[in-house]
Image 1: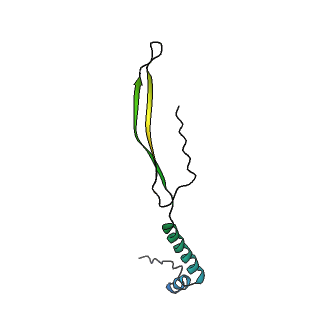
Image 2: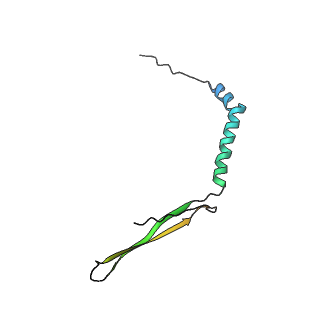
Image 3: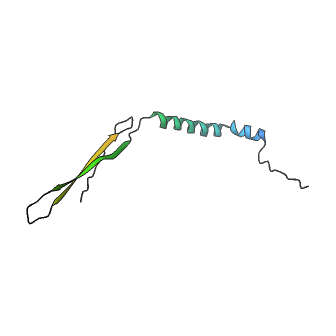
Length: 94
């Protein structure tokens, strides 16, 4: 029967001393406060989508074929808790 030895890198006392050290407490407190700050500070979140679109056939004169007119409804909404600033919307239709 083989004896398997497990490697103990740190004892329980060493881990407790490490957790109680001022450096670890400072890093942990900073991380917790940053998470709380990110949750509580209001942020803007801009969502967009297309509601509907249509294609219309517009008859032209005898020399030109029928013209197709495409329309689209675009919805832009701020779903965040803060106002959205410097928003630019480019409509590039070809």
